[in-house]
Length: 300
Image (tube, rainbow, N blue to C red):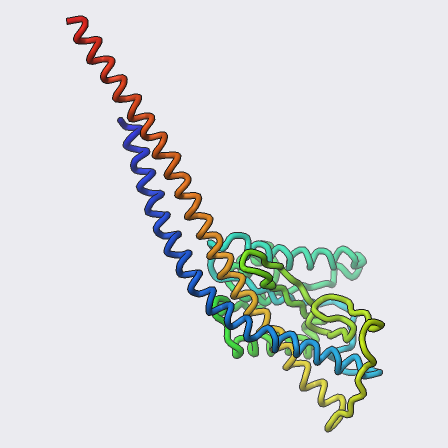
């Protein structure tokens, strides 16, 4: 009977967990509607801004602006967007792993003399990214928490301003952004793009072939080209950052909803198997007791 009691306790415990995962699934589904609505509102503006900046800058014959001038890379900063909490499948691990691999892939192409002087730092959005890179002894120069699930434009402005400031003061020769792109509710793509310096021939991390595009625009800048680019690039970085935050928030919520749905289904299957096993053990126990009673009666 001790085994049957333990199985009953286990079934009850799994049932309690199932109630929690079902509730979390419903909460995540409700939050996903709001996160998806914000993402769908931000995404056209985010992508159109990227396209407009690309069209404007590729129409300039010579780009002498610091935001477009490649440097000898000795310091790099990676902005990694993750969540503050777990229970969302591989969402946090996948984006942190991509950032870590991007760091190592770039280092593999650097000479040994330059490797010793290379410094990588992390701006962590979400406690999971902060903990991940601290465990791997990476320098986390700033971390943000409480904004990953429901970001606002002011949050993107603050992060972008800090990252742009690092680039302007040469505390970072390159600024990378690593986030998760929302494809469908069940499909998400960890993505790494270089924010600064900008490459006019590259959009969303992919090289663009100018031969398949129309003739570059001829543009007159007021008051001048230098002031225009110095104004528009920080705004561009803010917009890309806000779009990445909105996409990542939708991905985190969708991943949590999917994980809690899978956990609820798995717990139901586990309860079914344990109940079947419990009934078999209980039936065997009753049968054994009946055999003992009959055997005792026959002896008398």
